[in-house]
Image (cartoon, rainbow, N blue to C red):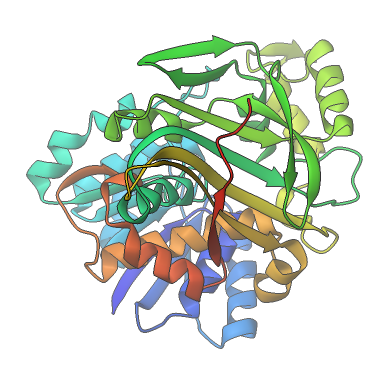
Length: 402
């Protein structure tokens, strides 16, 4: 049994601490901290009502390394689970090193002033965590996270070599809003509007954002248009599974979402550079975030399902070429009934709990900075089945036709 400090009180943080409270044999003491104490207290009240478990709360500005270090030392956890904004990853990693505790997150670092994210900033911490004898586990969400574990599970049990890997992320949910994002609007829009990149034959291929579209029929969701995007697990998979010749990431978007996004871009509301308004400097995208629905409020109205998985083609254990599809389907209404959050938060928050459990139980260990695909997939996959994200594997007749 171990103490854990969770930083971040959005939908993902809410799901993670609810699920931690359902596993008191692993998480003996839970503290939830964020910039807004009232959010932590509201989640703590829900956890107590749903599970009977009392968690502690604290206020913290995670950009303040000294204050975060002091809080970590006060709480004295074994592990800090960073579910705050990606801008804060490095500050929280610095605080963990200063306080001497393990670190875990669900999304890689990106600077506030540039819509660009990559692992180089966090991989640069390898020597510091290794020398400190501490573990930093990066990206234990769904994508990144489960999608990387799916790939290594297929390689361990089905394919001796993966030649092509496609990650397909479909959210078939309907929240009833004209325009809203299912996680932090600022991060979501920066990600969607960035140029697409995929890895092919040892090189990165860049294409304009949302310029490559394919249709796919998702089980229990139906036919959807999906778009080629860049996502951070492509970078780590290309590094740790270098035999893969091509890695791509696809995400579905509805026509209404894309039309709203196009208009917002055209009028400058997705800009991340400052503008002067009424004598004050504001960031248009941050202002847009303030007027859009808060993602954590969408659970009560969201219906439908998500379907996220990997399609891998390669050389099977019998020496022939085969294609396997490994995926999870999650119901928005079921997720809300269990934790008070919609499935996009649920599919990230549950893997965050499981990644934390892997570290706290010692099933995953090591000194340094690690990505998910460097770990044994089996215990993680077993916990997915037991804690709300069951998966299945199907053999497909052949590779994707595109």
